[in-house]
Image (tube, rainbow, N blue to C red):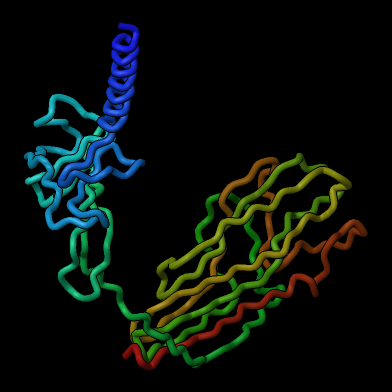
Length: 306
C-alpha cells in the first residue's frame, strides 16, 4: 500500500510538471510545421527547420474607405494590419487614429521625383526644372555725372512734386536682356537758423529714378534733428537702383527728389539736397565742398538675349 501511494504521488507530480511545460510551450506557436518557434516570437510561420517556407501569410483583405476612418472595422486599433483593396494602398497598418499605407508607389517614367501629395501620400511626379542659363552681361557704357552745389534742391514744404536733381542722361538698348545700375551719392541737410531754436523733430523725403517720365524705383529717407547748439544737421545719402530688361529704344533717365513729411520743422524752413543755405556763422557743420554730389551709372547688355 505504501509503495502504491508513493507511485501515485510521483505520477501526479510528473503530470503537474508536464502540464506546466505544455502551457509554457503553448504560449509560443509555430504554424506550418511541428517545429519549435523562435523564442522571441509569439507566432512563428515556417515550414522547414532553417526557417524557410514556400508559402506566405495571407492578410485579411478589406475595402478601406478613408485613411482617417476605421471602417469596415468598428474602431481604430493600434497595430492592426490589413490588405486594402482600395486606391492601391496595399498593406496598411493602423496607428490608433488612422491607416498608414506601407506601399510605396513605383515610378513609371525616368527622372520622376517622389513627393508627398495633399493627402500626405507618396507619389511619383515629373518635375520640370529649367536649365540655369548663364548671363553674359557686357559693359556697354559707364559714366559719372557731377552735381555741383548750384544744381542742388531747396525743398521748403511737404508733399511737393518731384524735382529733377542733376542732369538727365539716356541709354539706348540694342538687346532685350539688359541691366542699368544707377548710384546717387549726395548730402541732405536741414536749414540752419541763427538765434532761434528748432524743436526736436524730423523731416522725410523720397529719392527716385524716372525712365521716360515713369517712376521705376524710389527710396524713403528721414533726417532727424535736435536743439543741441542749434548746429546745422546733415546726413549722407546713397541711392542704388538696378533696372533690367529695358525696351529697345532710347530711355531718358532722371533722378528726382521730393519732401514728404516733417515734425518740428518751422513753417517755410527748408531741407537741402546736394546744397546748403548760405551760412557764415561759425556754428555751420558743412562747407561747399562737402555738398558736391555725383550720379554714376553702368549699362550692360547680354547679346545672347536678342
